[in-house]
Structures are given as structure tokens and as C-alpha cells.
Length: 291
Ligand SMILES: [Zn+2]
Ligand SMILES: [Zn+2]
Image (tube, rainbow, N blue to C red; front, side, top):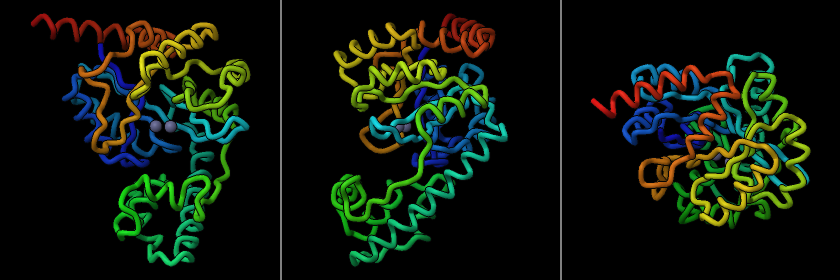
């Protein structure tokens, strides 16, 4: 069984719609995928209903919550979310408002620097609700003020850029609790980027963290080994995914890459109380393979 547990759609800063992502995942012969948009569950209803056309694939409703901590920016993934949960909805709505306000401020600063970009265009580029810095970067690129998205970050909207604006964020522990409240499983995303994350895991683990990303995107094998042994020592499920956004040069975790271990998939479904769903999927996949 092939799994990719970290995928973005147009509901945040991905290039493909939830429906397109589900079809692409099926084409890539993935059996388990999680849709994990930044701070929004808006893409989930469409993804879940498209998934019905592909019985040999399970789509896990997920999220990637941005948080700020003493260790820097930290992302917390949530799997098997009850995405209609009221409290989750309220917190996310607030985060959409602060994202929008931040985009507004960044556009104002860029205009102050002489760049003629407008907020309306940035919001159009965002399409979904979750407007982020990549959309501002795209607007700059469109107008020819930069020659790549990366340049936009380096020159203007990155942490030390003149048009960077900080956004109010949850703490990682608050994100873990929010996900647990919505009956989801919280998992620490791309932890290699976090300074001293080893000590920080103790705090998150006691808040209810269930796993951490080990088999992430393009982490080299030695990084994966290091993270795997940390996940073992903390009793965290070693998960992983491509962090696919649809941009050129990147791909879903398809057959061209080492797959997430079957053990991880099983642990995640067991912990979520979804062992039966996984069992049914397994039977179906085996049957198809032999027919
Ligand atoms: Zn992330
Ligand atoms: Zn991501």
C-alpha cells in the first residue's frame, strides 16, 4: 500500500483543486492520501466526495496548522479530523481573518516600496480562503518585480525582508489540543527544520502528539534514519508525505520514491480506531493485484 500523508490543494497554496488531487493520487496508484491544507478544512468536503469514485483509495481528512514557538515556526498536521467540529471552525475562521489582514499589510508595504500590486489580485490568486505569502510572491512575479517565487521571499517577504509582516499564531501545544478536540491525530510536520526539537517533543508528547513526520519529501536517508530513531524513542508514529503543492519539479509520493512503511500506516489507522477501514482497503488492493 502506497501512502502520501501530506498534500496541499487550492484550498490553501496548492496548485490543484481537491478533486484534481484525488484523481492525481489515484493515477499515481496511491492507496492512502491525506489532504492537509494550511489552516483550513475548506477543501475537505470536495476531496471526500471525489474519493468515493476510487474505492481502492482512502482519503484522510486532514489539516496543517501553522504555529509559532520559541523554536521558530512549527507546523502541526492533523489526521482523521472531524472537520465540521464547531470549535475548530471558529479558530480557523479567526486564522483566515488574520491571514487576510496580514496580506493587506504586506501589500501596503510593497506598494510603499514602489511595487504596484493589489490586494484584490493576491486574493484572487489565493482562490480558497487561506491566503498566504506564496500568493503575494506570485503577484510580485506576475508583475515582473521578481523573477522567481524564491526571490520574492529573499528580497521582500521572507522573515528579514522589508515587507515581512508577522501573523498571530497558535502555539504548537494549542494546535495539538485543537486537533485532539476535533478527534484528530496530531503529528509534527517536517521536524528537521526545528532547532532543538528533541527537547520540544517531550512537551508536545505530553500534550497528546501522536506522531512525527520522518519520511518527508526529500529528506535524505541519513536524516530519515536520525528522525526515525527519535520517533521510536518518544513512542511517536513515524509518518510521512511529499508536502506536494503541485509545482514543477515536485511529485506526489508515488512509485518513484521509497514508500511510507506499512507499519506506520497500520499504527495510524489503529490509533484512529479505523483498523476496519484499512482492512477492507487491504483486501480490495490484494484482490485487484491478483485479478
Ligand atoms: Zn509545513
Ligand atoms: Zn505542507
